[in-house]
Image (cartoon, rainbow, N blue to C red; front, side, top):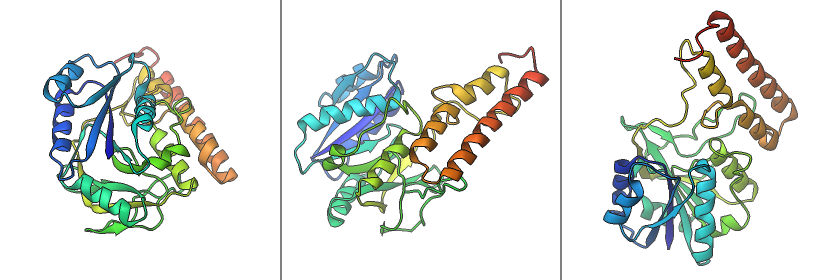
Length: 287
């Protein structure tokens, strides 16, 4: 059995199409678990109407992505058998019909490895799957891209876009939702998976397509207002949140010099950005 776990907040039509894609898979031994963070667009009602077999867990709307996924994992652990799996999946990514089966067969082939699918954008370019952590530059380049087959070389981090994990992973690894309530939690999670000794591979035959829907706060805004500059540095849904990035480096960066270097650069970057905006646009507080 595979438990397909996804977290949602609104995006009703996208979520319905995602569930439809899962039910269209060549492998049918699965249960879908949706954790809803208090959607206001009728997502839950629509799922119940069109897909009554889907298990829906609900929050009060104040826990963000990491806690919702952790809630789903805790529910599944109570239901799962030792041979089962959990699939992390984003509801704005649409898998090809054989993606689930390929991930499952690949995991078995590699002795119950963690398997990520290749994620493609609208042009067919692979944009995610497995990544290598380059602590010197604080970058995460993609592993070598292949036309097909499996990459089983060095992988440091994966994402929650479409990744299959054997249930035993969750006896040793958990989401650190208190430290990383939203962004960085998937990278932190998979760094834990690697440290725990689990094999991680990427199947380029399993493909899921990114719809390109934007989420979070855009950090590359030209001529930001003072509010936007502060949000970039501190908002919980900012990709560039300085507080969470510092916590992430303190926890995971293995090199003390790189750790200190990047923390200083982060603080300096946001301090300069906020100061520059405040000086140049002292009265433009909101846009």
